[in-house]
Length: 375
Length: 177
View (spheres, each protein chain N blue to C red):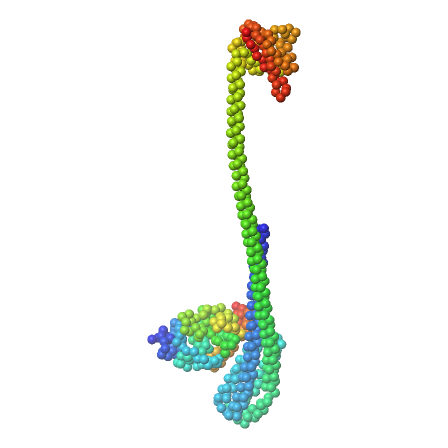
């Protein structure tokens, strides 16, 4: 969840960066194009200004030359010369400004030929006047009035200017559209980026909410867990207490049983009669100290040994090795006060009275208890 | 007082002083005009140099043409350059000194750095000048002028919208080298 959101946000920021870069590149390109368009507009204005200046200089040169031919005034001569010089300068600039277009250049070249013709005519008037040939100069001046070449030059210059004005409009429109395009690109880019930023903002907000919810759920789970831990701890404490009490009771029981067992053992050990505990096969499994005292046997000498090693019934000729005792034990009835002979370790026999009691456990005979009374 | 006081008001600087100064440099020349005033006649005509110096008043072309005249006299290779800008009547003229790759501009006469560095092409100079006016230029010309005839003669005209490689002064320089 976290990684996915981070990747999405990074992807959006990457997209925003790409859009910003593209908008910046496009804007820079458009600014360059706008600058070029602006240069073209300025260039056209400059050309129109030069054409106007050329027309004005031509008119001034013509008027001052005619005026000079009539007035012979030096100021008119100076004005005319200055105007003629200006014609050359403006024509030269007009040529330079229109040389990028072969049609215009050709047109200006034609105008130049006509202008040179006019300059020659006007210089002729000035020279004639300066030489003092007033009548001839006035004649030249009169003939020059309404000159076809001059009208043609003015017409051609006006036509050239009109073309420049038409181009000016075109270039101005181009420049305007360029600026409009730049505006659109920038605003579109900005709007798109704002939208993308809004999406990123929403993603971040959503992520934060999700994290808050997860944190709240985790906290609730922790609290629940804590409650369960407390409950379980209490249960365990109770169980532990109960167990302690059980243990104590068990300990007490064990102590009681042990005490009882020891007490029983004491009882058996305190009896002066000889007591044997037999297995089902009549082997000795236990005995009391009186056996050892009367016979001189050690415990290890008798354990797992047949009872016949120590004591044998007297009238058991048909059933040697205590056969009647084994039979009684098997059948589960007592033998009481049977005559028998007790053998000590040295082999000496002593007449005794033997009793046998079958030993039961859950109604099954698991062995027997034999008591010997010495006389 | 000598030429070092040329910038002080009251001292009538003369053409002879300028021509005879053996230590003349573009910087030294420009320093003389710090206190000159601007004549806003708005025509692209050259004033008589003596009048310019005595009245201590003129415009860009008076200064550029005088610099061209004086520095050429002292062995410098100079060029007169006129730049036409949008909305600026009669354009602006400067004197470019090829040896130092600087131009003398009347508008900079009051500054300590009264020479401006620029590349040698007309287009480079035009760009610098237009930038100093914060304006767009449309065309620029290299022209010659002499005080004898008082005639301006256009040598090259560079048009901004044309590619720089087609500038006539660049082509001429390539051909000569």
